[in-house]
Image (cartoon, rainbow, N blue to C red; front, side, top):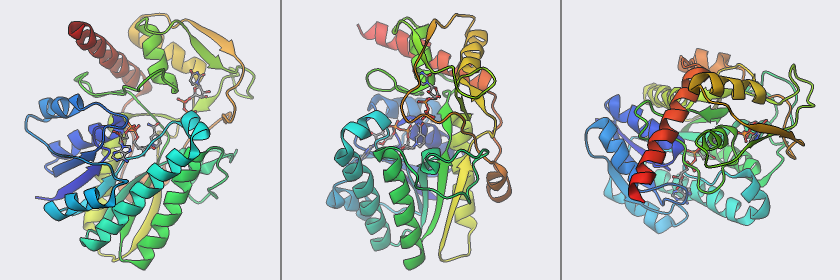
Length: 343
Ligand code: NAD
Ligand code: UDP
């Protein structure tokens, strides 16, 4: 049995990855402090996989607590999702972001080194490409022209991981995600942001369910076909599958040290107005919206070059945006039902 530690495994992407890894026969151990997730997710993961899951409630910024998890368990590899991810909050509270995200990664690397765990998959983001305006975004493009502390913290973590990999016999696959959307088809797990969503898709599903009144489309004066900004949306289950492929690659590696950054996207740009239409078609409901000014720091167009993921991980996203919209809405409806029954 191969043992995988998933930090941040009760979060949005981590929970879907935990399900896929368990279904593929891996022995998964989740570590999370519920900073941005709900303990009920553990039950829901167990419902999907039909067995119990190992869990440690731990804040990765505490090196002692994290090290106990390594002392009490055996791991062959780690997938490191734990981190704070709100761009807006990171601008208001940069220290909170640098503290949480950088300390967690440093503590994890120390414990991995101490306990001889030498394989790591790291959650990075397309935001490390910063203001780069050339698309599709290729992994060889310069990174670090970041526009907010969240993105800078990802850039810094990538640099730290690269340096540590070569100095201490560590194999790292850094995955740069584009825009994860959608949910598990069961409707049991999905994206459940605390407070008002910042991201487009959870905002739309909350408008569709009547929780929020209207979507603001941030700008229709970009140099794109319909004037709204373009992103590369990828179904979260496809994204989770990318992690499975990365783990398989790491487990097969003969090399004692490596660092590899790989994009995970569909390689297809979709505009905000196209996303609204796709949601409307997928759900049969209207999305009320108004056009407002551009959001500060937003790029006009961002989508991934996907050749490296295909060549090195044999990864290709399979699910359509329509499917993702249907699954997001299904999750939102299930979530609303559960919340209503609790009231
Ligand atoms: P999420 O907030 O749903 O999940 C992150 C999890 O990490 C949460 O469960 C949270 O409680 C946990 N966590 C945070 N700080 C912790 C700490 N100090 N100790 C223990 N647990 C901690 O976010 P997500 O969307 O699942 O993202 C997972 C990772 O992917 C993050 O690192 C994020 O930056 C990165 N990422 C996300 C996106 C996206 O759009 N969702 C895009 C690119 C990269
Ligand atoms: N967006 C929007 N209204 C919203 C949220 C987002 O028009 O309420 C737009 C945003 O300007 C961007 C796209 O939707 O062009 C995706 O935004 P998101 O925050 O989901 O992802 P990111 O900007 O990080 O790629």
